[in-house]
Amino acid sequence: MLQQTTVAAVHDYHRKFLGLWPTAGDLAAAEDAAVMAAWAGLGYYARARNLLKCARAVVADHDGMFPDTYEALLTLPGIGPYTAAAISAIAFDQPSTVVDGNVERVMARLYNIHAPLPASKAELTAKASDLTPQARPGDYAQAVMDLGATICTPRSPACGICPWRDPCVARIAGTTAELPKKTPKKKTPTRFGIVYVAHRADGAWLLETRPTSGLLGGMLGWPGSDWSDDPAPAPPMDAAWEPLAEEARHTFTHFHLRLKIMTARVGADTQPIRGHFIAGHEFSPTALPTAMRKVFDLAHVTLRDD
Ligand code: SF4
Image (cartoon, rainbow, N blue to C red):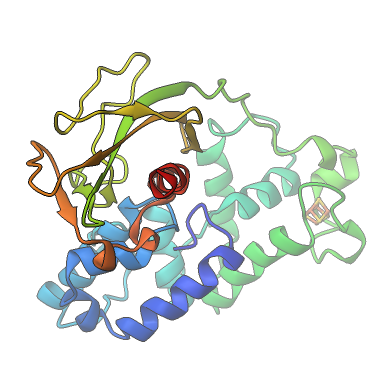
């Protein structure tokens, strides 16, 4: 949950998940739709799908217990090198090297490495690996991440209280403020889409479950076009579609999305070619991912006031 997301944003979701599914076995037995709905609003939905796959693999292949080695953890869905190292070090006290953004910053400064990220990642990881001790590696992994988070901060590192102030080459060279260097990011592109919000006379909403692969995969959403420079209209049925003056805007990791919203009130006997109607009392906007929730917030006002 914490990947790309702050502790403050994750806190309530973590409690909710542990309340609903306290063990890997409980999560493995959960309905996909229930897990996706509980995750709604947290973003990066591939994590939810992988969490579920991972729980099922832990139950199917490891008797419901997480394996304790880096190599075995790496075989589980959704667990990459960083997470495998973090679990094996922190949960099982294995001498794995955990490298997050904080550790990269500490290594770049400690060794005064000026090659920019991400190209320098391998060099920074090798330095971090050299420093990882055999004794209490779990404590060490947490300590070096915390050092980066609280002392060797991006701006104004507190070198005076740093346990590595004596060997730190950047501190001696006076280059801490310029490290770590990063290759400038390309400008984030913008994609466009069209979504269709149909409200039936009996209060039902037309929604669809998005394909499991791709962005917002497996999540509930409004039927619509592809997301591209010039999306083709894709209404889910014939109806008197009216555009909203305001569009929904949302930013994903690699692009900005601008969704044109079409709304329509439709009769009780309407048959859509895509999606399915969900009764008004069964539909909760909280089950929508944030981009789709923004669409609802705008469309809902118009449809309600008709
Ligand atoms: S001495 Fe300063 S720059 Fe060097 S690791 Fe410590 S906090 Fe970071």
